[in-house]
Length: 136
Picture 1 (cartoon, rainbow, N blue to C red):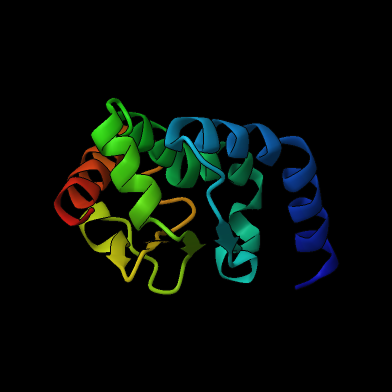
Picture 2 (picture 1 turned 90 degrees about the vertical axis):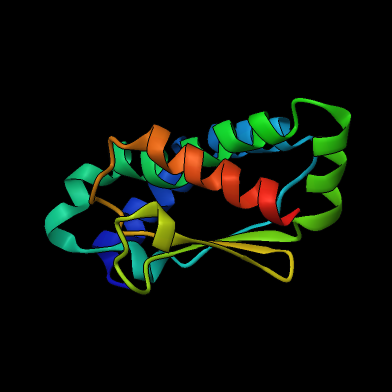
């Protein structure tokens, strides 16, 4: 990872991520382990968009989906017992949430382009809620 990427990552982790992580944990009802594969999330030509797109693509859908799942004790318990961690990466440049989300052996993977279809937050939330409801 080059210096430009390191600086962006450091700034994002210090400025935006703590509040996003707090909201994720609050929505889930527990401290969710999140592993972010930063190297896979960068393309220098789009770096100016990431402060806007990262939350929309990766974090807001988690927050909203976890709120939906944890709206009752049954959902909250199922999420806490089944979800071991969340992995965020961009291995396959998916932009369709039906391809981008996977839940296997307690690991929720979000493999989504960091820029494509960023404004389609609700679509990602719907797919994520359905995936979790069907697999928890």
